[in-house]
Image (tube, rainbow over the protein chains, first blue to last red):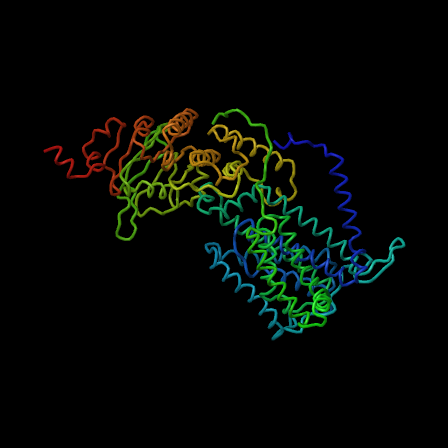
Length: 360
Length: 262
């Protein structure tokens, strides 16, 4: 029983938590030393962490291969863009749109899930891939006869997050410390990301999480154990999609601009790579995967030219080209040497005194 | 149908293309008995299990379980109604721990949903603790408590079979349907299994047992049903069935039995 576990947390753990918290709090200022661009990259890493954790519910926990996940990100992004921009002249506050975006993405998740319940593996991947493309193409073309999405031009001048008079987009001095826009977003994103991580951990260690894993392991046996696989699968799609929706809304607000271009197949593949490379089904692994795959291309962007200069004395290959090459090679190497992901899941140990034989 | 009977099967038929896997099979299982289901390979034993547990739809006939018809129900509803099964080719959740396997068996008798999982309210925490406790008890009951935190796939074969039984028991079944639980077990393990089956029966659970180990069937079953080519060829106590010439013919081949007679 969980009540047998020590409720008392040792001081060492508190010290570690305080240290990590301090490091996370100072991180945007350290990153800012290298330029505000790096703070933005940190923010993207967190948006992608949320996305990857959402996809991890579908792919990692329930074992349903979803190649169109980015569609839910698009739904969240466009909900925010339409409800907080001059496009329709509606300017709702973010705390109202965020649940709306998550809710609508959730509905789309169920809409995608319902017709694909009987599909698995490759077949499911193809249907979800189609779904992802449908959403993107719709957004591209929904500018006529009624202009809803503003087509390929996208939606501009989207409101940033605002809490009262405090806008997260403008630099500001708070308590004598200069905060830039991205730095303020960093803290909001940090809170949301921690929230998403906590929810994910709780979902995994719950009755529902176990049902997802049962379906992943053996759907026939799961059914024979009385799991309503239809409902449980739909819940996986719905939960995964809502996290995508939240991430999309934040993306919209931080960029202040969205267009269908941001939601192509390549984005779906990248998010899926984060899940797979990090360690499918393992939350710390997926977070690591998301951070690595966001940071690596950026690190390569800034290091490839100096590296070539140092090695060959001149720039042989343009940084953009060589960066993608190295990125691809890194992915291949990880899959070859860590086929279960960088941080694969381990057995979750449960501690309990072993009771004697029980009455049936 | 009497108050004694837990499961009544009437004229169950199942065809696969031109093959009659089951033809009008009729039988009754009483409360609290261990009911054996035997027959040569391909006789239709597992097909009968699959029809009973909703994996296949029957082409004819119907089941009455615990006084209520069991028509067109999905496998998960069958489990909810109180029939739990194991599989001939073990189907555990391989990459989950033994304990988690049994905890999943508790799914159908518990109810925490998304919000319970997210907010971990008092009721959900209590339910989780109860699930964990009960699952540990069941692991102890079948004798694999020591392996609670090992992945199911790392368990020895006999332990996997017993874990499957624990997982099925976790659903609180009225009828436990076991598909060849002794397959691949050595003599000692089979003896332990026999004791386990008797204990489960003592605790009030009716057992439907498919088994090829005749010694086990004959020593543990109250009554036995014999299938051959999808037809019921005999039913009765173990001793009666053993002497039945049709059963001998089915197992040893028709011509041999003719020679024996002649």
